[in-house]
Image 1 (cartoon, rainbow, N blue to C red):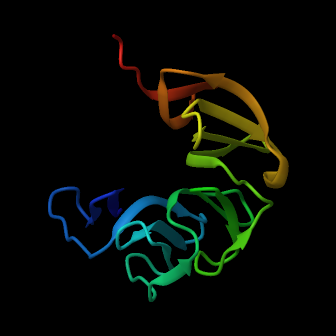
Image 2 (image 1 turned 90 degrees about the horizontal axis):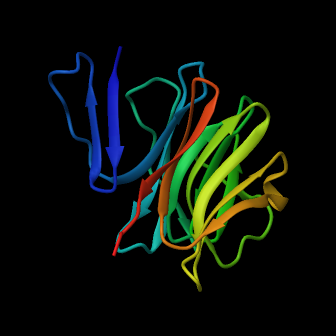
Length: 174
């Protein structure tokens, strides 16, 4: 069973959890479609283009797909029928993890993380002008509802475990 770790500095892959190989790239998120297919998302260059790679046979990756005009994809999830990626002022969908279509207009928000649970998308991120952190929720990616706004804490990840949602991040207590 392959172990995969991805982050802003690259990707590490291991088949045994002991020995790792390090393909090139700056990846922020990975999702599986449950049928052997994967999508990786991230950034190319100095936050100039969002990138994605896909595979129907892990860990072989297809050619890098560049999406000029989108600075970065920060996370990706499989919702049962499509990949959904979030990033700087963008939420996009893809059936194959390589070609992406915008899901509505999301100007002004930087989306950091997305999960799909119980038919709902839950997204964390912040307002690019006020830096107020927010959590959005909904079934329609084009019109998510802001369910939490807060100044101070930075929520980088949303997790769902044991019937409970967790917003993970940090707060700079002064």
